[in-house]
Image (cartoon, rainbow, N blue to C red):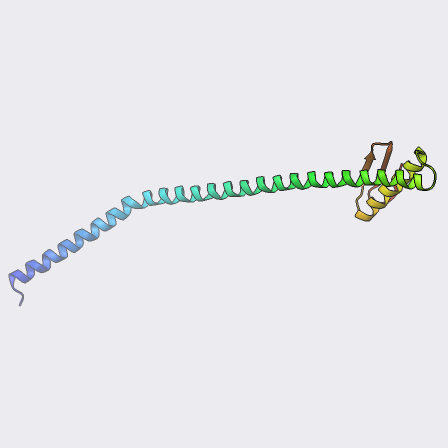
Length: 144
């Protein structure tokens, strides 16, 4: 049979094991709520960083769109100035230099061609001279 020393060692081992098990369970019961709070805090910080990144991406996209619209407007201005110069030269070539009606008609034709070529609808083009051309949406017709 077992000696008293062996029984005492086995009892001590079981007692220590039970005590460690109770400490482990108690620590889990105490630590679990703290862990959940920490986990939610980390999830909130991750969401905040994601939203800040998304916001920065939207700001960069808006800035790029602004820059692109400025470049498109500058290109349209250069194109219209080219039309005006070409209309003046065209009228001068046919012997009608300085004739307002000739210049206006050539500008209308150039604007109408450009609008039709680019496929815009409802666009109004205005030049320094009293020229404006509009395309009615969905009809492709011209209004003077």
